[in-house]
Length: 166
Image 1 (cartoon, rainbow, N blue to C red):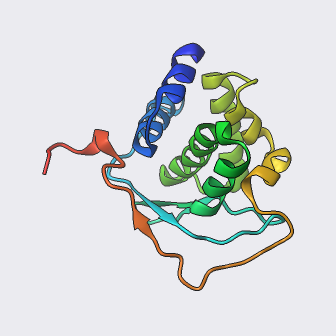
Image 2: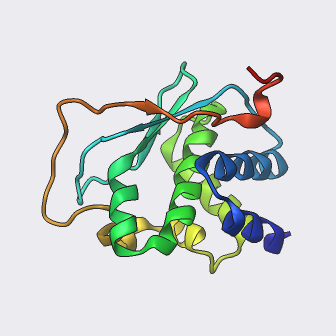
């Protein structure tokens, strides 16, 4: 099954494609799912010491990804893009299912990534500790927080939960 999940991640062409894979994997390994989520992209700033890749706020239906690490990945190691997005979406999706303890979620993300993609996959390596990847995710030596995050919703994000086409 690892090969199938790896292939699906490699073949993903968009953020919604990666999210559909995340949902499929979580349903298989945790037996839980949730529909109706939206993805917001925002400039959440840069902090190499206190990395901030995304978040989910309890009681909402929006996962927010920080655009800065995605920009930095494109500049330094483009092959990290899909594994990194998979990692952050998996982490925040598990939060959206009601798992609030950060250590518990990190543990689940590592176990699921390892079982679904293999221990040698970049997503699993990121889940086991992002320290060695920080230089590819955050701009070194500078921290900033924007005045306006500029939240943009990704259209068609949670495709499998739509029961009609508008």
